[in-house]
Length: 512
Image (cartoon, rainbow, N blue to C red):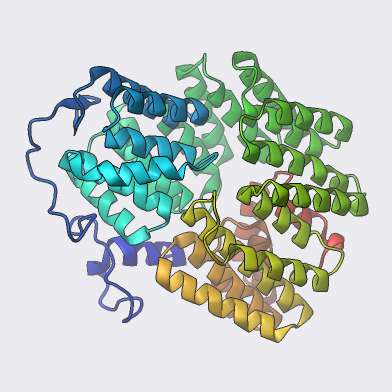
């Protein structure tokens, strides 16, 4: 059993294990027994007579049929990755019924993926008590996920699944969350159940495609086949083509990637993800002038500051790919100043982390990371708490990596201790993954390759951690683990900071 699977069982199936993770931690949630709120009564076996019913199954406390229809449309848009449209439609639902708690919850939940809306979140929380019991479970789950409250989120998820075991929308939303918590096997199991209920449910086909390349042993053929089916079901939507473009690039089919991104943009000309995707693929192909031109187009069509900064950040990274690191560092420094002046938290993290990781030397990297840590160690206006906590864990993990390679013992120990506390308090799997790989970097630098490999295996989403795992496995003669790590590493192929460092080891010191 993998480290991740064992940890997830502790969270969801504690009755299978005799000893808790930590005696001082609160009791974990259980799949069938834990309710979302200890102060709330469990959802009744039969819900009260509803005002309206969402998708024919979930009773909601609104008397407005227009609001209900708009919310159904918003959920459909969210599931199909039309996030701006979902946010707008959910907002329209709240205009039809200003007391519709679930509409505010979805508005906030969808917005959190692009530009968080704390006012909608607070309104959802304030109105939750007037919602139906079943509706309240979904509201609580969305709120807890957005705020990073993992244990209550698991409790709400468990109750939702118990109440609606065959509702494809509930199954999809929770499976998507598990996927982004990096529990790919559990997510794939739930998504497969959705396709049994509705073989042509587009969102499940999309996520399954990604799940097939995110498992321990990627299966690109199944991933592409699933996404082609997704595209056949939704020929007039851009996201199926966008997903095919991204996964095609991940598996090395750059020409196919360009074709699919272009097809998506023919359907919706300002589909941001595909416009950035063109720039990303041209970057990896070495066509740097064309990459810059595509990123400029992405900047122009972006509908929020977070996306605009991301396009500009990817454009700045082109300097590194074309072997002009000094120009790249100047571009990142200028972009970071702009992000700070606009107080855009997501850009400050993305650009700040990139600037640090791509520093000319490890000493400079550590200094920049410590500055970035100071910014994100407390709540940041405009950033969801779950995103802030996960961003901080990424910063601390990189601090440990850089300090381990440069032998700065006090930074190693301090950052690992902070990660350990954060992981114990939050029970967030991504933060726990960062803690595992941080310990792995430390142990590898100490020459304990066997234990380092065990820890590094706990962080399956970081290219640098997977590369270090391969190195550790080589040192112990564990060829199967080394081969599996290198196979998994291939599906991270994208013009990201970590992939650049993995493929350009001379640009920064890496695990050795």
